[in-house]
Length: 342
Image 1 (cartoon, helix red, strand yellow):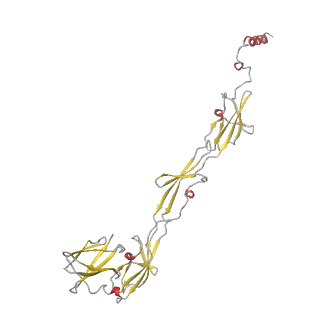
Image 2 (spheres, one colour):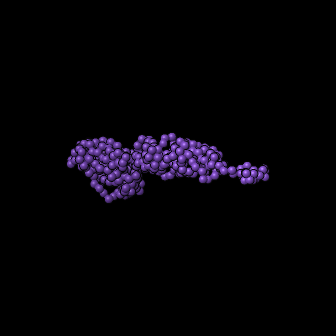
């Protein structure tokens, strides 16, 4: 009876005390309820740190099913839901929402051909990238793909390194007429277009050296191939070679009736299409320029001044070997071979 009276007296004497300072046993502070979103690939965290207020440590946690749970939540492993924290007779609950992280896939590598169709970089990403992202150039030959994250998840980025191989060029198909009395002809010099050197020749399905010798080689279709670097395909052009009789008007001055002389001299060699002749005799001289197939590419009259003359070849004349034939009034013809290399 005396002990009970003492307790009552203490309560009466502390009439002005703050109620929270009195611990009659069985109280506690579990904090205040809260709700958070968690990215599925986030690291584990202590759930007490996400409660509001000032929760006391040392309490116990229950999972959404009411079963005991550790103080830590492991994203991607533990289920989303409401987890409750109990301290004494006080409870606070944390509602956790699981947010799927953004996935841009893994870095990839694309090798394309310069003449290939427009293509998407998306198939070159590794992993399982989500659609709906956006691309931007993030470096030399590098395109980056970004998938925006839903808070609190961050954006995710993956890159594709792009290499573009140049497509090969074997030129265009052409028909080549070669005089029967012409010398050996380098077929490459007569390919139309802008063929790359270094290719290989075939005739009738077998290899060929790319030089046609009238009277030795068989007329027909000679094909030139330049190998492509994957994924570019090989490039092929075919030249149909026709041998023209030596009696053809275009062949009458090919390989016959001329002599190579040291004077006049022709420069430069090779040249860019402008011929300079030095040491010419006085008087007009008719002349023609023949290609190595025996076809006339230019003809006209040269009028030397002080033993010098200049000839501007037409711009359509392609690179290759040519011969300038001068016809002097005294009947002597002079052959001056030269190379055009613009």
